[in-house]
Image 1: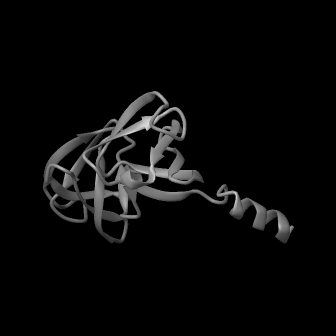
Image 2: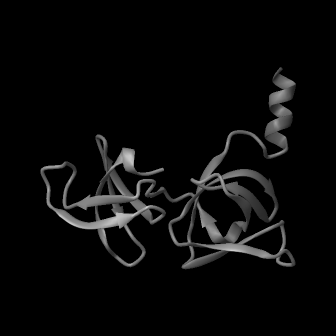
Image 3: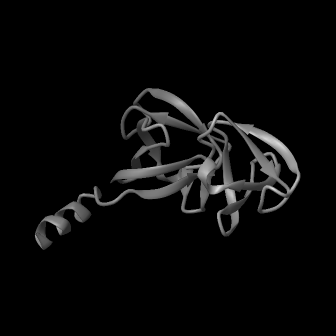
Length: 138
């Protein structure tokens, strides 16, 4: 069994590694190279789970289980989250007793600033910031 685990790790298919898009817009491709077609684009702070590494390309899955390829220069290990509910309140502090500063739709990504209990301090690439409950994000 140890040999099987070692082989999985060597193939780059071990447990998924969470990464974050670190550029304003990243092209998701159908294969590991610039000659493959662009399937869709991801915005800054979009989290992904890397399933396989084929240097310098990463095969990934996102919060909707969509899969594609990204060049490794487009991502880093910075913590991020993405909203998974249709409409959520982002608050001025960690708790429902704090004011709602804005609402956000499903699929909006944020950089994680810090965590406090079940609450996450977040910032969007446009500078909007606040707190969101962990059950509302992936």
